[in-house]
Image (cartoon, rainbow, N blue to C red; front, side):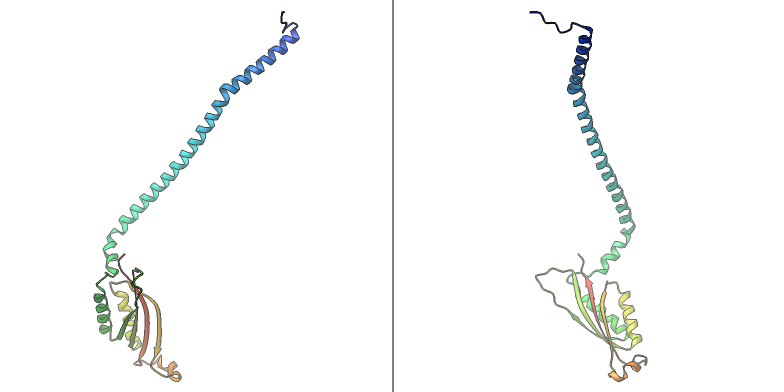
Length: 190
């Protein structure tokens, strides 16, 4: 039995077109499509590496900036270490507060707040009750500000020793007793 596939020119052209289409589809399916998929995968990997390199570059720039800023503030580190209290040397701090008050003519009483021993805190909270005249109190505040210790005054309550009816006149008259309560916080070295 003989097989006559191509008998007329029309069949030859059709057969050639079908065969060429199948051949092109096979080449695309077997060679080009895996190559395209591989190229897309490589393009995605290159993009991800580029993004990662940009992040690393940014971190490097931040690190350089941080090191530069550290070098700028490095001379101030000893000063910063002095402004914090050292655990166990609270008596030196209290003595400094007493000396400061005496030097400006202010009488004061220091009350330390007790903290829960179970909680480890780097804060020393205390209350300063002072009695003086207004100019001495202002000098006292300036002297506290000039101390080598960092003192954060959270609240100041002022009152005069005069009665309620004389309060307006007492605040303008020098020599009247001014009573103040300062709620303050200092910090221990971390």
